[in-house]
Length: 413
Image 1 (cartoon, rainbow, N blue to C red):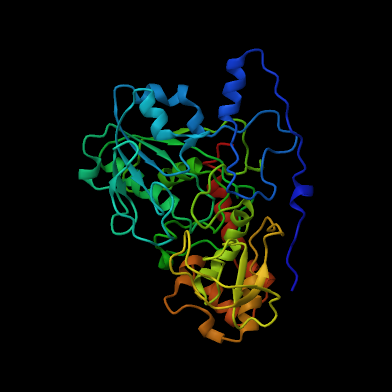
Image 2 (cartoon, rainbow, N blue to C red):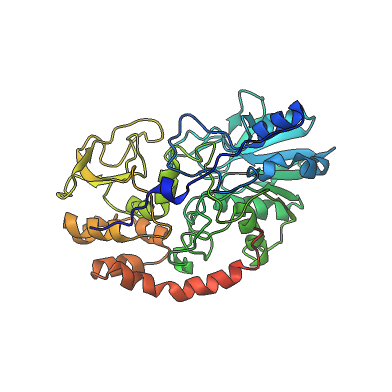
């Protein structure tokens, strides 16, 4: 097997910037606005772009732009653990500035970001602020009229990773739709997309529409969540247009590497896992483990019957995975934690494991989850038919070309 492997540090060779400021205030400002490193995360090279002259500042930092829009208003916030300004949570920052926050809405993984993938998250009360928490995952994915009652404006601030089956864009869809139906404007605080530098993968077909594939976009769509919100409006994916204001990121473009200061979900713990996620997540629709229940989710893959695997691991219940696939079984596979993902979608790991495990059609889960991830039935069929990666990729190029033309209307950076 040959996997595209790059030396991440060589590719993103960086210069550290020494900022000299005339006043102490300016020093404090830069320190608070620059993306902070979470010591619990292991970084594989994402960070300030080479030659970058100013720190990337997500929309949440542009308070002078959106605080006036919240003055005297009753505010709802759609957010989670990624909704921060440096080390301070957005909710705490707004309350400290006198903003009247009525309630908080949280996506998959919950407000604190510690629930398993697919785990039903219950509504409740935030212990720190005493604010009501409304879960937008499980049976209640779309805010109800009662849950929006009394709100004048909704602030949306979630860190996306730029992959179609990552459900924060589906939450965005439902929040925009519900707010539009209730004449509530949405202020979206934009954040960088760590996978924004390329566009790849099959475009979702209508027959495979689901919460992990709400829209006809490729697996990797190369847009920030703010740009994506504009596309939801512009392509009329919601029947009533949402009054949407996007607070833009400063000092950013799609090619700028960006290290997420906070893990966006329990099993995306490193920049390298986020980079591999678009390709390795296909294994979630198979019998193969992607490392849930280990210290390296989405950086390792394995199965007991993969005889070529020199790397071994045994999944067990733990943080972010209460009941992992192949729990307690010795898996043989591959460790990608020291190899950076190519900046395109690669199917080779899935193709190789399909062939080497010898499971045939039993390789894919019977619940058709693989088809929902792919956005079509064709990808699975082509793998079963023995097509090469190059042959499979050729089939989605025209759809990608058409999507790129649509995308041009909504890009901000």
